[in-house]
Figure 1 (cartoon, rainbow, N blue to C red):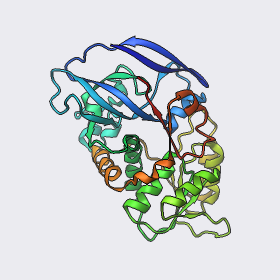
Figure 2: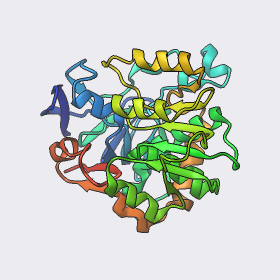
Figure 3: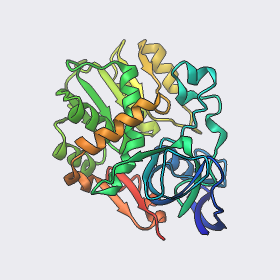
Length: 327
């Protein structure tokens, strides 16, 4: 079967490669990719902060199973699936101790290519069946939401806390969704330099804009800007001894100021990685199915052109960018 794959080959450069997808072997599944969200890591590669080119990207996807290997019994042709793109061997010390997101074989890459493409053969361990949503693109929120749930579990938030979320792109939006909509927290404040994104969030969720004149009010800062300027802002928001959850992974940039601020202010940092155990994925499927209001679809920018989606990611008013995969 002919397959078009979008490869990042240099900063700000995406090229297409045509290859052939064979029938899946044993524990593999052939997935027809339908939609895929752009995550902060994808964008970091696009702008060259990560530079191991060429690279096939895209893991926040919704796809449909079109073929299965002989040793696959949990999935069937026609199933709709998402992935957390953590390979979990189930046998290493981290998997056994409940830290399967840190599996020692996590980067083994048991797939032919990622989801900015038409098709892929993927090992069954990556995949989770989901209900057929009436608005399919919202399934692209499941994997990043699982990362948010894992972060919140580490941070041990409570409803009495005043929490600032700095940056309301994809991850910031999902922190707002989870804390305000699922957990019913009342004291959530947002800081977003893109005022269209800020208005979108305030329109759909019970949150307030951050007020800079209120000093030392906030119990927890959540950094979601994925930029050095945003990181500096989050550190400025922290009073001495404050708690900060850092979701921005600023690979390829000078981040010595982060360590310096943590030391000088004696901050209590949390640096969540990936999404914890598989329970977070199962919870995220349920929460997107039952709590995400389809009327909030205008928070999501659905692009038919992958080049436009990446080039506009930091300037668009959409809080999340999702690519519709052409076939």
